[in-house]
Image 1 (cartoon, one colour):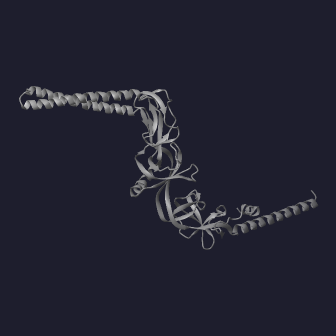
Image 2 (cartoon, rainbow, N blue to C red):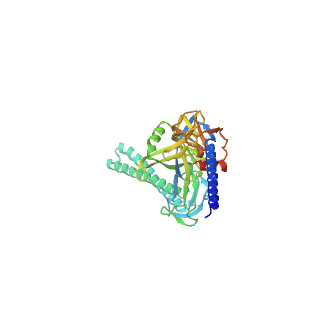
Length: 391
């Protein structure tokens, strides 16, 4: 190779090295400048407020009373007195069984009672006569005693007849089947014309009481002591929410804490009662339950998005007086609605925590604090490339 070609190659290599060094130096300078530039972040002060402490669970709506209406006497069903799906009041007519046989039995019992009552009256009259004649010694003592026994016999017969009349009247009353509770009628199980009786499978209809109505739900056993202590002091408010957990369907109160823990699930059951005046709860419905256990006075509250989760637990970025941030480990103490959390340990009232822009931060980063509601601008491609180059 000639000397001239070697000189050209050396010059080209030198130029490439110089250009590369200058590009690398420029990228490093850009990266350092970008890293050292303050980062815009949204900050919110830690505030104190009275915080309600809720326990939440999935609950099942259950009717307070459910009654399967079964005829108590046998006979032909002659009429239906209710409409399926409609509410009935206690005592409303549900169905009518042919009453003629039972009416005849009642009249027969009444006739027998009247017959024995007449015999009793005659025996009592004879006894009264015997008592007068006995004082004049015209009637033997044995005859008087026999007449007394006859009166006692007819008195017993009249008492038995009275019971028979009452029984026959009750049996006749059973032919008019009436609602034993206030409730909503379900689907009719038997049609008019069928022979029904105490053995009718499924009864005539099922009545479900929905005013009031109850909700059954379960909580972990670690909440038992707290619930029992709060329940012993006063009634606990319970809210039933829809499946999205955003809308309160009905409000009620806790009525029962079950007397045992389920060993298979490690949970215990509770029952809350709701007036349900608007029929917003229906038996068998699944609802989200939120029970107010207590209220923490002066709790420290921050927006939920301020709390970050790392390998060592929860933390927040706190803005310091020199406008740098510090990573602070925190302990949360429960949710406040759907947008805030209570901080049990790690921050103080008045300190400012970062709620937007945390992904660009590290301990010691300089920041430009923005007021709540202001969103930090999205980093430009050049800035993002510069940060990657500096890394």
